[in-house]
Amino acid sequence: MTTRKILNLALLLFALPCLIIAQGNGEALITAEQMPYFEDCGAYQDGTAEKRKCSNASLISFISENIQYPEAAKLEGIEGTVFLSFVVNKNGQIESQKILRDIGGGCGKEALRILDLMPDWEPAINEGKAVSVKLNLPVTFSLSNTNTAIASNYQIHWGALKGKVISKSALEKSLDANLLVRNEFGNDVDISSLSFVFQRNKTFVEGTSTGKINSDLSKVVKKVKRGGTFTILATILVNGDFMEIERQFKIIE
Image (cartoon, rainbow, N blue to C red; front, side):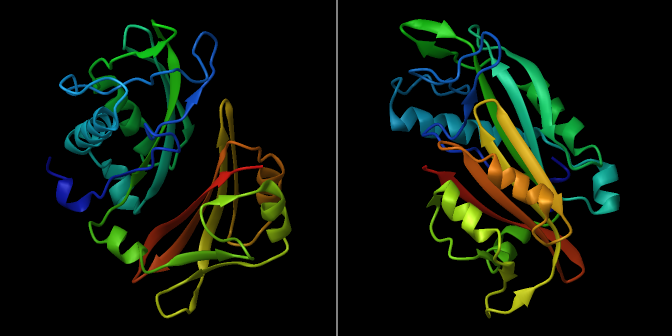
C-alpha cells in the first residue's frame, strides 16, 4: 500500500491466548471452548498454539496490507488507538461492528472499513457447536515507522506498580502518587494527555486528563474488576511530534 512506509500499525490484541477478548452481547457468548480463527490456517490442528499463532499473524498481515492512513488524520498529525468491537457469528461472518473509542481524523471509520473487508472467520466452537462471540480489536495508528523504536525509550512509572499483573487495591493506592513518563536517561517528560482504559467482558470505561490524575481517571480505577485489562495511555511530545506511550496490566483481584 502507498502509505505503508509512513504507517506503523500496532495491534493490541488483549489478554487471552488467542490475543482477543470475548464479551457477551445478546446471543454472543462471553467465551467459548475454542475461539474463532482468522483465515488461511486450516493446515494446523484446531486448539493448538501453532494454529492460534497463525491466526494472529494472518490477521495482522491482512490489516497491515489493507489499511490506509486517513488523509485528515495525517494532516492533523493524529495518532493513537481506536478500539473496535464486533461479533463473529456462528457462520464465521462479522456483524454488529461498533467503535468503542475513536481518535478522530477518520481513523475510526477506516478501522471499521477494514472489518467490512475481512473474509469469513472459522467460527468459535462451544460444546461441539459453532457459536457467536463478541471480540474487541484495538488498532493503533502511528505516523512514523520509527515511533515504535523511539517509544521503547520511554516508560510509564506510577507509584509502586511493577510487572504486568496487579490488584485493584494496588491501583487505588497509586491514585495519590504522581504518574510519570521517563526517557532512557531517567528524566521526566511532560505528558500532553493521559487516558485510563478498563476493559472486561461488556465493560469498557475510559477517562482522560491533560496529564494529571483527575476525577475522571479515578472513576475508571474505581470500576476496575478482577479479570479485566487496565491500560494507561500517555501522549508525549518528541521532536515536535506527538507519541503515545502505553502500559497495560491484568487485574487479578
